[in-house]
Amino acid sequence: MRTVLFLLLAALIPGPAFAANQVALDNHVFVERVLTDAEGKQRILLEEPKVVVPGDRLVFVLNYRNAGAQPADKFVITNPMPSAVRFADAGDTRPFVSIDGGKQWGLLSDLSVPMEGGTRRAAQPADVTHIRWAFQNPIPVGGTGKLMFRGVVK
Image (cartoon, rainbow, N blue to C red; front, side):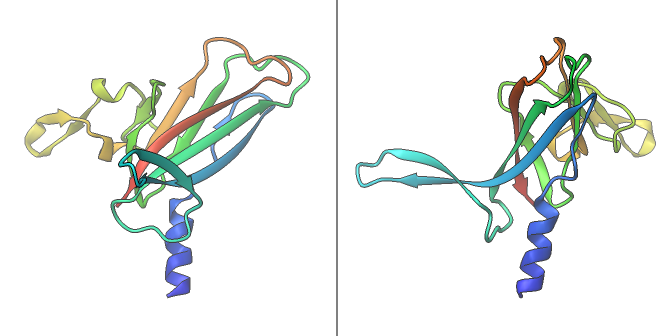
């Protein structure tokens, strides 16, 4: 049982995110829990994933830091979706996504999936295989930031 749980948790950790230039990345994953206190007020807690089950909402956090000696121009982060997780959202950011293993990119709302018979359907969050953020402004030397996306355990 412990081996199975470990393998499931390992499948939830995103593959290494890749960034341009000398940008250091640090990835973390949390389980999002909603707790209701005695007064009926709901609070969202982020916990380290010890046990996860299908349907659990996960929050993936990508911290970045320009560790180089020059501004990081044309800064891009590409993160594969863990195979055991369905993409849910990326908060207020509007990353490009891929639904074909990273071959083509676009906003989820602009992508479509080929079907049998030559028809197409609108891409859904479950189709996402990779997420990409492309920054318009250089990241200054020592500059830091954080990105996040949510997923649901399949």
